[in-house]
Length: 290
Image (tube, rainbow, N blue to C red):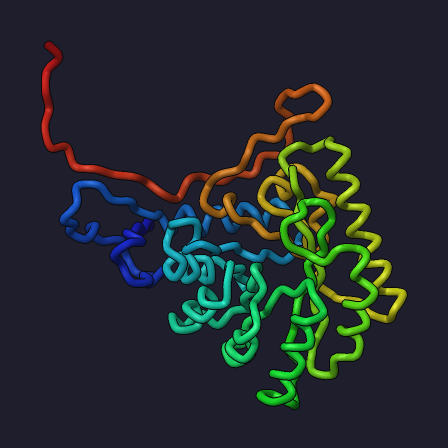
């Protein structure tokens, strides 16, 4: 049965409940999110990638405006075991809504947030030695018998966030010597994942492989590796590794794949997703054309 809710006014809905009428609004325009479409999109991504590939459902920025708590609840019912948010406060908001699945904080954290990260059992992204040192000190104080998992982001060419190649030796040394930190994951992000044959994409993949190899030479072998966003899930299977991070695809959208050589659209196995959000309005007046 289809179920919709208004992410602006509704609390997180029960994904097993039957559909009911939309809540009364004072504004004539509103949006509705189909939780059925959302769950189907998650399953479409899961069936598209390798069976052993985990799905980290990206629900950052209030699930791209779809309502983070409601979407997380629906995606959990579809099998999601990992979520990704932008910042620590989003992760804490999930915990307060009862979402206890693994939650990756893509935007990392800044000094003063390390204790909240640990207390709420979030998984932070790191890219600097100082972040590792902050977490190590906080973990030693708060949970000395546990290890805090982190994912290291590698800057392979997007040049937004991430560890640069020249800094990796120092970062790996810090990870290897931190007794209370678990180097669980390593990942990167494409700059142009929708352009399937762009040399820059291959260069990014190669740099990512090199970063992994450098870690392995030092006896560090993070078990989780991920690079593919929605467009790369659709068109670049080499980047799937053992986890993918669908964002827009979960909500029913995927950028068209193109060729850098021809500039034309490229066919690829279809990622069968459908938009989850509908924008609705009440008709206030009809007027015949003069």
